Image 1 (tube, one colour):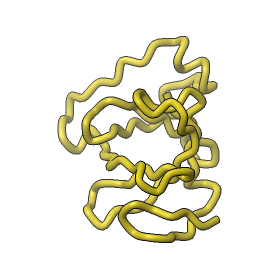
Image 2: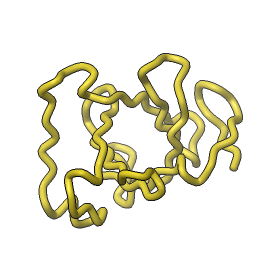
Image 3: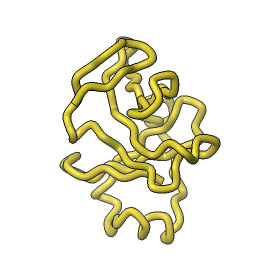
Image 4: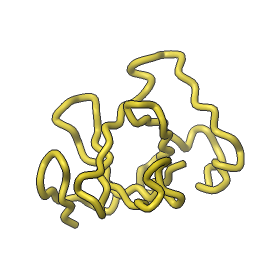
Length: 113
């Protein structure tokens, strides 16, 4: 699948790179489908809207910045995205720290809260 990006023009992505936000991202509730795209600025990753090329966020693993980072995610939010075990998730944040993504262990199924 091809996606037009803010930073890199048109890029080819696979379905494994797609992240669905059922309720959107705070402030961007009308946009639900995003692609994870490698950034030229390691260790960042782009979260690029599939539907709007000018909507993209830089993501980072918060543990690279703070070893004692904690994500307090309530049980109801975890239930919405079918997470049953802490070992099944990876936490990544938008560089402003407003959104927490939950990645299932094998990356074959990705959801967000």
